[in-house]
Amino acid sequence: MATGSSDSKRKRPRNLRPRVSVLRVGHRVGRDPRLTTHLALAARALGARRMYLEPPDPDLSARVAALARGWGGSFEVEGVDDWKRVVRAFPGRVAHLTMYGEPLEKALPRLRRSGSLLLVVGGAKVPPDLYRVADVNVAVGSQPHSEVAAVAVLLDRLLGGPAASRFPGARRRVVPRARGKKVVEVRRDR
Image (cartoon, rainbow, N blue to C red):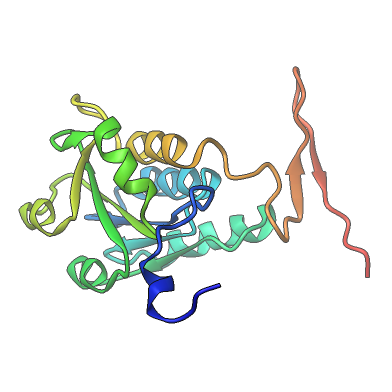
């Protein structure tokens, strides 16, 4: 096996999935907590590893952290004061999800080759700079839609469906069934 700088120039193996984070720009504290919580839950369930929230909302971050503790995984919401700093410092590709970008089907091959991918979604008013600083502006659909829908559709197409029915460290899990609901507590052997 070769070593040195040639290893870093190799293409990523096709079976590796990008490490995905989400950045929510323009969250309106007090007005958007339900929508932003749904965004975090969808991102977590479909394979994202973390969400950055601008501006910070400590109550929302705490609620999502509590949910992740109960249902497993390591997903967290990190409040940030400057979305541009997050975008500039991100070590991978930045994809702004919008209805005005290039079609999702055209962008997907490049997104799949990303080692790390930051999906950026805006709130009520998307800063015009976002269109310029993103590596790619991706149209999940060319009609108005929510940021939750955009992230969910993209993650489903990108990562191939729900991340897993069982997340590491889960205290509870859903038992799939045709009718009714069944949630079981996960026993921990001590």
